[in-house]
Length: 76
Image (cartoon, one colour):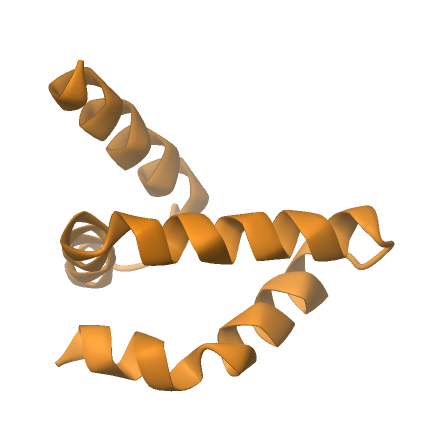
């Protein structure tokens, strides 16, 4: 079950990153695999902001700014 869930997560992420260069896509996928709980938390926060009336881009940018330090640590 874990492999299937991992595969589906990768496919979903790839569909969201269509315009992104492949190297950046691979880097993002590696970060998600490294700390999936962090990205789940970000996704939940973005969804909550969307439900409160924000568009997806604004909600995502706001949440990413709030977690900028954690995100930068994952990139190292």
